[in-house]
Every structure is written in structure tokens, then in C-alpha cells.
Image 1 (cartoon, rainbow, N blue to C red):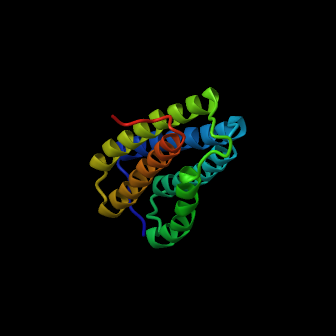
Image 2 (tube, rainbow, N blue to C red):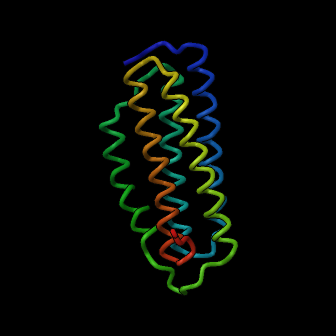
Length: 160
């Protein structure tokens, strides 16, 4: 299915495209920097999901509505991978300050990106495109949750 973008929709989607590119780059870079193997695995998995988001945003920019059912099947398989990686305990029991900093930066990034999707969703006139963007936003929130769960499993994020 194809649709036409307004100038505003196009500009907002271009912003989302830049955000997704940034997320892919940061997760890949942080996976190389992380010392904990589980965190490396988590960041690599999230980088792959952000790449899928980027591909989806690119399709929307081209006026195409992606098939959510097909992408949901692929993502649900990967979803359990990053949830499991986040839940696993660090084998050394010690998380480095660098790894904590990487996690905190990505939590802030995920919060920001999720919020920018909110604005884009509200400005989008095509219902199918809104559903696709809403799906991505939900996954961004799940990424933040996976990082939170990882930090909490390490005793580094205590909710009071």
C-alpha cells in the first residue's frame, strides 16, 4: 500500500530516520566498548532492532506502508533474545562504571527517541502509518526496559 506524505510528515520522518541511524551507530559502538559479554549481546541485539526501525522509516519516507505482520514475526524472535540477555546476571557480579555509563546514555536516548515518535504519530494523517510508528515506539520503550532490567539485575538501578 502506498500513500502521500505531507511536507510536515516528511520532515518528521526524516528526523526519525536520523534518530534511528544514531541509535544503530551508538548501539554498535557501545557493543564494542562494553566489557560485560551479556551487555555486548544486548547492545548488538538492540542495534539489529534499530536497523529494522530504520528500514521501516525509510519505507514510510518512500510512501510505502510496511507489512507489520511479517516484521512482527521477525522482531518477536529477536525480542526474546534481548529480554533474555537483559535478565542474565553478569558472571563476574561486577559491572564496570563504563558499562553503567553506556547503559545510562542509551536509556536517555531511548526515552528521547520514544518521545519524538509521539509527536510524529500525532502529526501523521495516514492511519496505517500511525500504527506502524506506534509499533516502533512501543519497541523503543521495550529497548529501554531491557536496559533497565539489565541494570537492575546488576543491582545498579534501584527503584525506591
